[in-house]
Length: 321
Image 1 (cartoon, rainbow, N blue to C red):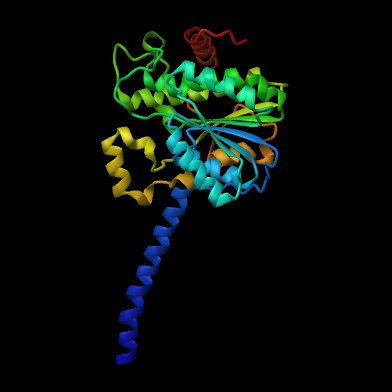
Image 2: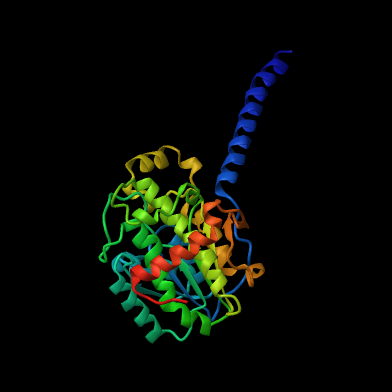
């Protein structure tokens, strides 16, 4: 009787603890999301990833390097870029990791980067527009654009425009735009596109992520028949340097790390969109957790998408039919 009672006293709490751990593990697996299961190899392929010196960009670069790709890390901070490149070379054994300077807040830098790439590379097979800013204080780019709009949307819009001929020549090729679920809270305010009348850092980020979705959908229509596809994605809520401008989000990410994706987990959908064989002819879609998902009603507004395209071309001084 005594042994039985002791056994019960020990086993029942242990069972409850195991059940609790199992429940927590289930939550953690849900937060982590799906893993890209593709075994595609990228030997002989050239990949450009913006902002690949840190966060999900760096983990995306590491994965594609393991697959054999020549990976170009396009970032503003060359020192950090070289440090990331050294680490990726060491962990993957791939020596074809190069760093090139790119400041998406300066159209001159974007044009210089594009010229360098066209001189150095004969092909580009994958362009991943990953870099971004989030919830930063009101500021403007070198060209006078509100920072979120300028970096997250206009910078990548111009970069894609300048590299598109090389992508077409390299077809089949892919463009991957990192957006966010937060695009659902965004609107495109054509009467105050630069947020000069009223500014909220959180909403400015939402607007720019909506612009990524609209850009993706409109570009997909224009790329039909070229062999180049373009898709957008939500990486998940990731604990990364992207949160550096928000003290609140930094504290939350530290206190509730359990509920945030790691950069490696956050990179999975970017990787999936870049390599998955089943996406060879898929274009204009939006993905989350390595699966297609819906976008907001505003994100499906083709008229807004066309107008944003025209306005973006006008702001950048380019003609892109």
